[in-house]
Image (cartoon, rainbow, N blue to C red):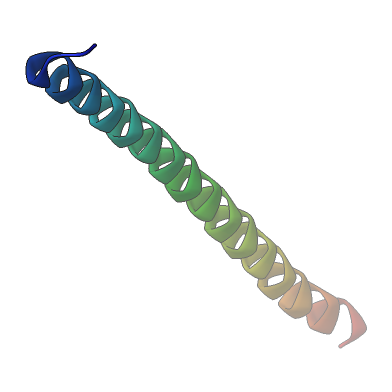
Length: 59
């Protein structure tokens, strides 16, 4: 038979673990979002840099 204290303690531990999980997944999502944004920005910069060069060559 668990005492109220044991139950409160286990609930607290569960909440701590959930919070930790949430933080970790949030950090992962932010990291992935940042990587995607960087990749998109890099791609955009590449395509913009290529266009004037092609124009200059054909002119």
